[in-house]
Length: 327
Image 1: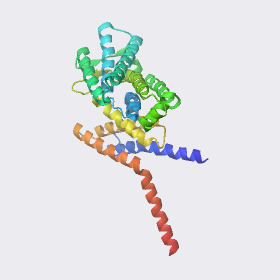
Image 2: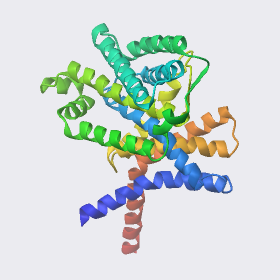
Image 3: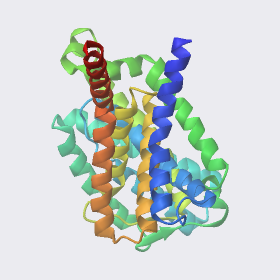
Image 4: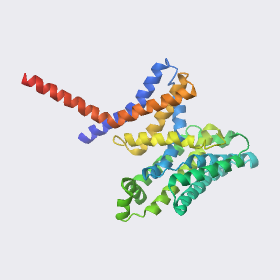
């Protein structure tokens, strides 16, 4: 019974965050925010960023920042779209090409990190610039678009089915495999993990392999849902991953109440609602960024310190009870 009660309390705490954000913007916008179609769209737009977060998760836990992830997503999507435009390939070839391109590009990033033996962020920046250059060479125009049957996987319910399959796959990999155990060991301490027999270089490469698969599927979902992809320039592909990184941090904050994967999804959903909600209030782009940063900071402070607040309130209650008893 205690376990069930604890799980229910934790579930309520996790659900409370998106409910609070929804209620806040619903009230502030006078009801224009939060219509069922808008919420469904928010959920759809959360799928690809969540997969990118899963792709980056293992590396981030091991203190490796892969800034090339956004470029991998954009180049994979753009390459598939260009083949559709030039040769009229069908849905299945399009799916295979986009996913396999993401896998190959992601594995190249991992191989570069292992062989160059320089900090991951340095390798990632170099690879990112190369991939952005290739995206510019591959682009048909500033915006590369697809339409018709090719976007089928971006429609309801196929996008949710594909996401569900990838969620289950990552859940099994992260929680029930030797690789997942090694990642968690390296996240705690690389040196201790090495001392207990974990091959940290092999684990690092496998992190990039797993990341590559999820980046390929994320690219497929992203262009299928949006119907287009912009040509990256001047490191603009990093804009894709920054919100995904924030989603991971929110997920880590919620991990004390739920599984990390669920926390990451909730984090990305809240961030997407935040963007949509600020847009519904008519804020300019610069004010949206400022408000998003402040709001996210408040959420993180509350999430990481709510137990302290609860303990403080309980201690004050006990003090008041003792004072009353002594009187």
